[in-house]
Figure 1 (tube, rainbow, N blue to C red):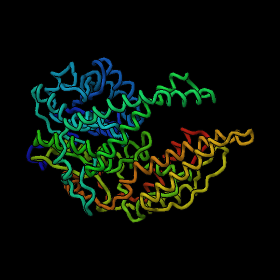
Figure 2: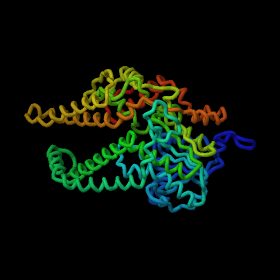
Figure 3: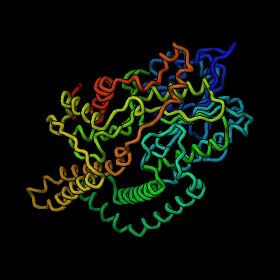
Length: 515
């Protein structure tokens, strides 16, 4: 790694301030955290923000109206933002990572780029494989190619995920390369995924009568929309669910938890083969901020949150895995700070940096359940009638047993909803349908998250510690990503769980009292 030599500015902000930095993914959770940290912690850096848009005018509108109005930018003086926008130090570029050349009409500006922080990604675990590979597998190299075509060769910070590695070993090295990559040709995978989509679309046509019957039944029961609209919605959902399941099976056969981690692994390999100036930042499960822009900042429910809320509301009772398995969580500001440090201190040659906690400061599933139980016993959620929900104990089981329990519950509720036809029972049908829908979501959670909750590996983060040591003492305090220093009781019960409680209260009024 390069340290601050003679004549080199020691501060991270000053080092970055000499560059033209391109950021992608600024409309997402991690991207907003990175942009906020850049605006608060750098000096006279020129920031180009690539956003999906038809042209530069739309990109600027998205930056000003959608990104800079978000919560993490409220502590930033408006006068600073306006000055940077006016003087060209903060500028939006239109581009699409799904297209070769990015469809960028301001390609000449890419020639000024000296540093890239690439946060853009499809982060859904249920994304069909064709869409996931376009963004996660091929987007980074399209970006690098476009910048090189414009005449630049930047240092490249690529935000990936810790789960690209082979997690079937006890301790995962930061630069682990999954053996399954040797058999994956990105273009061949994309071609196969497109064929699956064509097959699913064709098969959905043969099920048109089935979708129409379900739509007619729903409209007859008073649900919104026409028969045609509901039928088309049901058809699209069937296609997407079929493609998501097929992609998940493909990824599992190749050794990954899902298409997200597999396509991110493909993206890493593509980029590392094309450049020797890459830092791959591999965060684990990214959750609410520890301190910046403020403790608890969170945008939407993240990976662990649906499980936590389902448990707190007594929907989830059985979880695949062991209580002793680590659940690797990192605050979003740790990830953003690591990205800034990697950009300010580029490596000589490629490197991978794991922003993870299980290697030095493990939190187990049993401990997470204990913190959740302790917090929600003090601050319980409320049911639809305003009654407190008494959180119980979470049981750990094998994947098959947990699925058996969730599927059995779903099946019994579905039968109850169908047979409730007599007038006294008919009044219970709406509640039965709600509970059936909830049981279906719980079953899907078990299926989707089981590959993660069953993991027993721990991630090494020695490279991240070495990178942190490059920073001067003031920056190490202001931009820390030392996950070994996190107090889990404090973070979970004072910061993260209260934020989830608040979000549930805001989204579902009447289901939670202010904590």
